Amino acid sequence: MEAKVELILHNGTIRTQDDDYPVARAVAISGNRILSVGADRDVLGLASKHTQVKDLDNRLLLPGFTDTHFHFYEWALNYDSIDFSKVLSFKGMEEAISKKALTLGRGNWVLGQGFNESDWPENKMPDRHDLDRIAPDNPVCIWRCDLHLAVANSLGLKLAGIGPATPDPKDGVIEKNESGHPTGVLKELAPNLIRNVLPRLSDQAMLENMQKAIGDAHRLGLTSIHDIRLMGGLDGADALKAWQTLWQENKLSIRCHVALPGEMTDQAIDLGICTGFGDDLLKIGYLKFFSDGGMGARTGWMTQKYLDAEYGMPLTPVAQIEKAALKADQAGLSVMVHAIGDRANKEVIEMFQRIESKGQTQCRIPHRIDHVQMVLPQDLEKLSALKNMAVSCQPNNLSLDISMIDSCAGPRGKYAYNLKTILNKGIPLMLSSDAPVADPNPLAGIYSAVTRKRMDKTPEQGWYMEQALSVEEAVKGYTITPALVSGTGDRLGSISKGKLADMIVLDQDIFKIDPDGIADTKVDITLFDGRIVHER
Image (cartoon, rainbow, N blue to C red; front, side):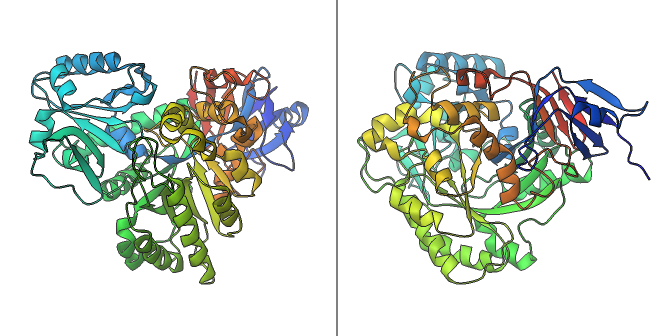
C-alpha cells in the first residue's frame, strides 16, 4: 500500500545533519515519519489532493533541537516566580521583588531565580538585610543563576528554622557573619531548608505548568529534552510521576529522557530499570551525581585557590560516586556526573578510567560528564582515551560566566568552556542550556558557542576565541550528536528518510548571517512527530 503524504515542505534551505545527504530543498512527511528528502520536483511529485504543501520561501529547515541538560521539572515548578535573567542591576532586582511582593500581598512567599550579580554594575551580592528592606512583610528567597546559591530574608530564614545555632546541613553552607548570624546566603544544599517549607504546588497545577512549559519549548525549537535532577534528589520521584502522567493522558508532546537522582541507585537496580527503557516519547535517562558545586558560589572544586576564595569543595565524595557508578554500570544504568572545577573534572575522569578498566559495561548508552566547565589539557587527554564517554556542555552559561570567571580565576579562565578542544579530541560533545540556570533558547546557545560573547555582544572580539565552534559544529551539538549518544540516532537527529519528523524552520539562515545575529533568530515553525506544534 502506497504511503499517504500528509505534509510537504518545499523551496527550503535544508541542512539535514545527515552526512550522506547534507543539503536538500524539500521533505515529505507521512504520519510521524519522513518519507522523502530531496529536490523540490521529486518531493512535490508525491503530493495528492489531500497533502498540505507549505512553501518555505527559502527559509532554513533543521532537525528539531535537543537540550541534553535542562532542569525542566524545576523550570515548570517555578513558572510563576520572578525571572531575574533579564534584570540588569541590583536596583532592577529591588524593583522586581518590590513589585512581586505588592502583587502577592503581605505574608506570601516571594520567589525568584536567575540573578547574576557579577554582571551588575554594582557587582554586589544581596543579603538578608537588603531583602528585608525591599519586602519586610514577605518571606523572600531568590536563587542565583547557577542554582548553587540562594539568598533569603529574615522572615524566610525564620520560617525555615535557620538561625545562629543552625548547623550547616550535609553538603551545604549557611553563611554567617562575624557575630555568628546568618547573612541570608545559602550555598549548595542549604537552600533545601527553604524548599522544605515552601507551599507545595498541587499535582494538577504542576501538570498545567509543564504543558505551558512544553509550549514555550516548542517556540524555541526544542523537540527533545533530557530532564535533569537537582542535587539532593528531592524532585526525583515527583518528576518521574509527572512525566508518566502526561504520557498516560496522551498529553506529552516533547521527547524526554528523565534522569534519576543518584540517591536512587539501589532502588533503580532492584527494580531492574535500565537507561533507555521506554518509548520514543518517554525514556529513563541517567543516574545523576554531583562531584562539586559552582564557580559563582565558589564551590566548584579547584586545583588552585580562587583569587577571592579557597579551593571550593567536593560534594558527594568521588569514592562514593564510584561505588554507585560501578554497580550502575553492570546493571545497564548509565551515569552522568556534574563536574565544574578542574579538580572535580580530574577526579571524575580518573574515576571513569578505573570503571572502564573493570571490563565490559552493560550500558547501551555512554556515561557522561556534564559541564566540564574548567578542565586541564592533560585531563582532556585522559577523557579522550575513554571508549564509553560523552560530555554535555552549556555555552549559554559561558555568556553568564565571563565576568565571574575573570574575577575569580583570572588567566586560568583559558581552561574554561574548552568546547573546541573537546570536539577536536574526538569526545562526543552535546550542547545544552542548564535552564533555568541559563536561557533555554538553543539559538542563544549556538550564538554563545560561536561568538563566545555575552548577550550584549561583549567582549567585541570574543572570549578565548580559540575555543569557538563553527555554526555547523554547534548545530550538531543540539541535533545529531545527542541522538547518537542517546541511542536514538536511527530515529532522530537528522532529516533523513524513515526518521521521526521533528523539524524546525528559522526566519534567518544562521549559517550565512553575521554570527552576532544568531541569538536574535526566531523559530517560525516547529514540527513534532509530524505535526505542526508551533507556527509564528
